[in-house]
Length: 286
Image (tube, rainbow, N blue to C red; front, side, top):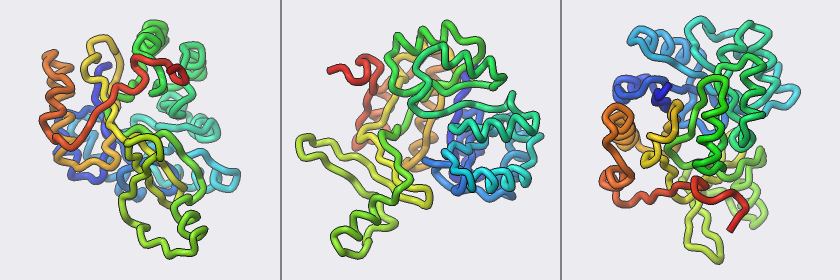
């Protein structure tokens, strides 16, 4: 408990993020919202190195799979050295079933983004034999605390990053440029969306698996970690590695010494703004 979990772009970041406890890797064909894609060889190499320094590695396979994609996932899993993978982040029960067939259900971490909002669902996952559950980001602080107090095992709490508000398998940026009969000049650019009636600029990304829209501000719960007894997920998606390193160090100091606040985060980069999301307001309630 109270581990720092971080997504990584490459093996070099393992040494850079020395204060992290668990490193998350992904392959582009089997995950969404990943900072970089690792080949099967790179996954196995990263796992061996991470274990050699006494830390853990999670493999994200959090895509929702169509029928034909499940068979491709099975082939992918055949190439992974499962003895050195400590956990699998999944959002699809079909993926859980494949891992269960391999005797790996106790390494599954259920991470369906918005679905786990009560402790009945959470504990049902533990009853199925799963290792852990990532609680929904659309929960109040009190609701998260209630889930933690009722949990049959350790839970993971999303703690820092641009959390995504919308996902579609459709390639919406391409479709937009096709609709206006224009070339997609921005295929590899970082694009922003602005609502007509708000000033917020939402981040929009498109890759092989579809389109993701992220919140304009970075979510953080650092001021409330003393009330949240779990493992803390830091999402490096669309963030510079030197920036992520400083964030991890501040979170680590908060966990170990109780020192650290959103004011410390603000000092790193004044251009970034932060939000507590739904910690103090229920979703759908104004």
